[in-house]
Image 1 (tube, rainbow, N blue to C red):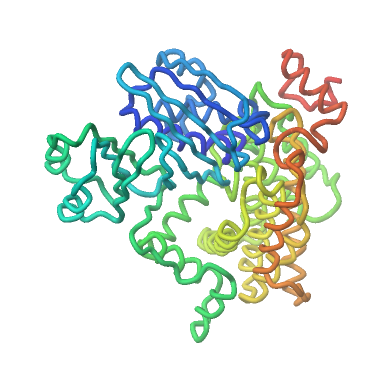
Image 2 (cartoon, helix red, strand yellow):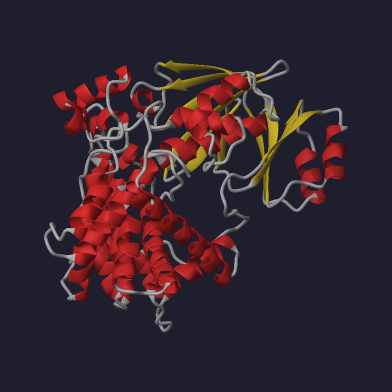
Length: 514
């Protein structure tokens, strides 16, 4: 993806893509409503929600090169967009209420971003739905449903059929592919069928009927592993293969491709980046120079991890392509730590891929029982999660045991409880960069502690449950709204004003221009 925030940019783009499909690719006017009590009211422009959503309306992918020019592109497409901020009764901080119009129809969509680029559409035309973008979705708008659901079920192998009644009456079909064209036309010819909408999936891995996974907590994983003696990365292979209905070889191939994107981003960052709308310049180049001059405190591996983490964050801030791992705001810590340590140890690409799989499985547990969204759980949900994931991966690089990997993840997450999200000037750069570095270096420390058999005391499952409770207890001013913490300091407000006036030299650090 490109952009500062996965929950703002990648998620909103996926929502926009589904809106585009709902309108058959013909959008002329859009009204977007945000609740003032949520995160989007204050962050939708600076963190890229507008960019992602508008890009989705245009049918773009999350790594589209044209994303920075989204305003020009939406104007050229002739789409008129209005944004309103007023109470809409939203219960989730990342709620989008969208009204779409063209010359023939008006549709309404309510959707939420749930972290790490994941989404859920919760209403279409005021009917309650649940769409995560992991099925081919067919909506058959009807005057009456009568016996249509049975006819469809008898004619087409689909996963789920639901009849919805909102401002419009429609039948929703979830499936692994769209129905045959002949059946589509047969339905369209029926007098009770008004029109049909087809929404493509936006996630890379599909869901399916009666989907089950081998485990979804550490406790269940350890039970599953009894008498198998699998390492954490092998358990990740088993989980992803069963969840995605793909071979273990394909899982390895997909993770290998992800690692290559991460490595490419680090290499680009090390060469230096430039971008106008940012508050931090290429910090990592000065760090590289100090490393060459032996001017830093000794610790080659630690310094390489800091360098890699910084480089990745700078690519993200310059609209380069990164992997949300687990999020864009925390995209530096996990690859910076795992790739940095792996390279410093002289390990093969295969060993790094295995470590990343191990880290990813820790992320599965966090996503299932806590959150990756800073708007819900503060920076603990992003950099904290990245730190816990990286710690487990690093233990894998040193061929530690499964128990040591889980211990490292537990200690790393324990160390991050309560971290707030208070980005400066509504840019996901500071204190995000230093918190990513903290998360990466914390992962190394906790990995070493686990490899030395420190007692983590609290099982990982219980730490993740605690993350959820702590996140729920944070005030919304400290959850990615720009309304608390460092974001409201005198200097932060000065930087924000300078950005708005175009007075900041964005390719230098702030202290050099003030």
